[in-house]
Image (cartoon, rainbow, N blue to C red; front, side):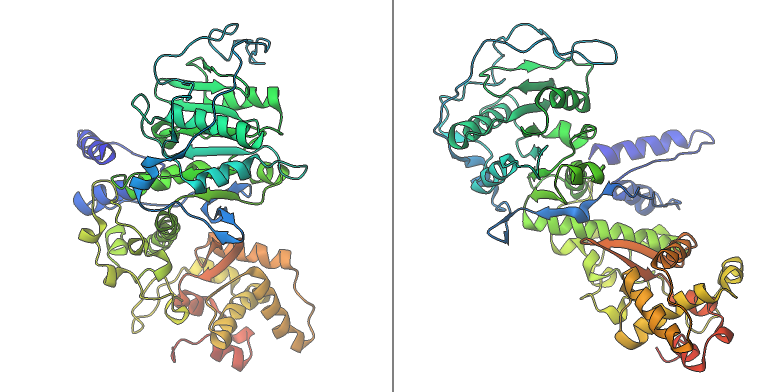
Length: 506
């Protein structure tokens, strides 16, 4: 892909003289594959933390119908055929709305503010001649209708549709967008504000209009959504259709609306990182906005294989960062030489998509890199150490917690959970319960959950624990059990507790 060609050219440019390069990416694997595995560079890689208001891929849940998960069929030929379209457009040509201006600089949001005009071929057609809605399945129509079902609890729906690559040829994105808007009104009496974002600009068609208008090219999608929200409020859903501009563009949201539904289908020639980036249009800082509009998750309709692969790919990156943070080189980590990735991180099982230009199966031995199953007993350490060699731990971190009975008890609680219940990752509540059950025997007060959370976060910052999300749960996991053994002050524990943290018998 162009991304990887650019990496080679950029690397050659950087070699011309001393330089410092910092790159921020949500899809770093194409860069890593070129710079690490092909050019042999040793990169410093670090994850960037998320705000408490961030909604990630773990809160993007499959569309459901009658309690069952629904997916787009994998057969692209069926998708291109579309589904039957029988209604006719019922728009008005008169432009009745007042001039809509931006509050900050009083500049018009739309070109040609006071007239509605015919579009060039392919731009908001009447659709009366069409017999099918292109690139559409019945599952998609069910989701569109579901998004229109606003009530007192759920409002401010924002649907992102990334399914149609065509812009001007037959069966294009404007035809699909108009058909969907017409169908929602004709069949279900639901108004929809329509936005189409393509290379030539952002186009808008309001409810009840057979024609639309183009947005000023100095305006971003977020500004358009903001202006339309001021006009229509939360009761009417917004449908945004895009493809390349949606995948590569800026966030699809405004202050009062964030994505509530995502419909995503990319052709088989698109890489895994392209798919993950497109799915990322439904992630954002604004979970509080989503909840205030009555939603607790983002509904996604895509293929089952792609969604499973994206979730596994996200887990793969999380574990990769942990291995590198534990001292492994990026090359060793990717090859599984620093310990296998869990089966949960095996995105190769669900997809044949490439990463950039690379076929990952040519670079990675699946059996050597990933575990066969998520065996908890084999998933306790993300960093392999030679048990015969003394562990070289961080003395400063060890000293900080050495005589802190509360912090030591947190580490002991992890070891008890593993020794007794074979649990290697758990919620903070499990640590609190284990801590309380252990210390109640000595007559001490129960520990506050807030205090435990603070200690867990402190251990996370020091690289002792890692935090990740699984569904709606936040789980904690020991990164390296030898590091825990190195840090535990056994003089503060009973003989039984001291025995529990010993790894000699593991």
